[in-house]
Image 1 (cartoon, rainbow, N blue to C red):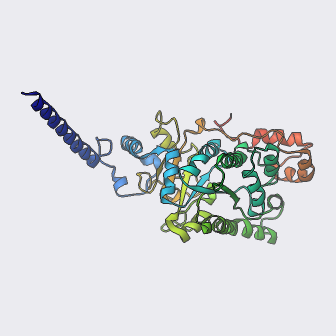
Image 2 (image 1 turned 90 degrees about the vertical axis):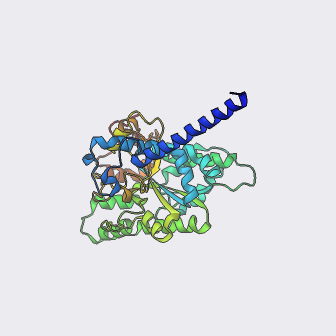
Length: 396
């Protein structure tokens, strides 16, 4: 055979092999994503099922689905902003990795996802001017950042990772070329005096009129006000926004039929009911999802994420989350897996967070809220160092 004929023959053989591979791949996908089994009946029928009721023989199917569909968490969050204007990241307050991921992603969220505003739960709009000064400063001022942190929430929130998010936005803004729009940072919480609130919760009779007023203000009105703040400061401005809030404010589908109505308004659901798929909720795992831990054993070095609704996990009924009858697709629309509980870490406490001046002002509040007397700011700080953000398997 001439050389030209050999080349044509080799090329034809190569194309035939490619076509055969494509046919095999199509057959494998049709028969089962891991090439060995069909999708389990509980997946195809979308039947609610508890994780512990899933046969281990179905685990290869689930692992193969994760391999095909899960993305590195950074890429997953970036692409979400191609489909949605506002992404709610429902962090667990005491898992450092949830903060670490967003802090590391701030430059990419700005440059690759078009995010122009971060809204969070840890301050309210009355402090937005001060927040703007912090995130537009030319250089880092740790003392100013700490002063801001000490004036917010309940004067005991000594988690370094939460306040480092402010510094991450400042560093991004300082790196932008002159004339570029800055990333804004806004507080979206309701104006609640948490010291007064926690003091009354710990001291007043549960059936007192004042407790009823607090229930209305905190339980029934808080998330409504938070949603209004998001509308005004982000959605009405027509920008992409990341909402960094506790998981109890982020769910968009909890309490939707056929589930029972939830006991209080949820900010995420309020926004979704009004704006639909412009709004999307991501649930970052806390290491307690044992089925996922088993499936991901030996497979993850970095966080990964995927959409829940189109996944075989959507019909799972998860217990121990406070809403025992809700399917996973109600609790989360997007999911990010970080690792087992033993692999995660608690937040880093800030030494000396409580100053002498704070102790003098809030000594009685510390006694009431934490159930023990303190003689000095040093004692309060030592107590917080040991107890705040604690959890088995998460000590640094």
